[in-house]
Amino acid sequence: MTLDPRTWTVKTAEAVSAAMQVAAVAGHPELTPHHLLAELVKQDGTVTAPLLAKVGVPVAKVAEKCATALGKLPTTKGGAEPRLGRELAAVFATAVETQADFKDDFLSVELLVLAMHEIVGVPHDEMLTALKAVRGSHRVTSQ
Image (tube, rainbow, N blue to C red; front, side, top):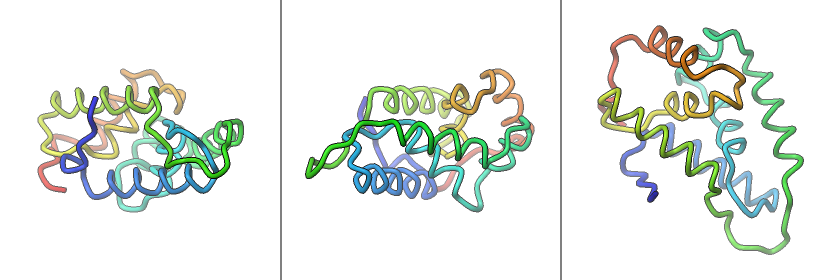
């Protein structure tokens, strides 16, 4: 799958960029879902925190889970920029499918969070129901 940042919201692009930076500084050879989710829960002005609240999962718990997972990743020194990992590519593929189902013009952060429901520790259907409740009938039509 080829990632196309032109189809992302600004917040999605910011989170991916920040995750890449964190992975590079840490010497991680690949970008993982934990890198991205750790950055998504830090963002202000998105649906991430209300979505997590709706499913009863504290943002701090998700951040801690991500930090623990990132601390266990292998590191390299002087390597190239981190590459997109297989697991994160699958997250994007799932999020893009959901984007089409929602008829959104751009890939939003909440669809990425939904695609990472297993890391959050919530069943997909429960997370999807919560997302629909938080988001309503709103479509993402601008970046």
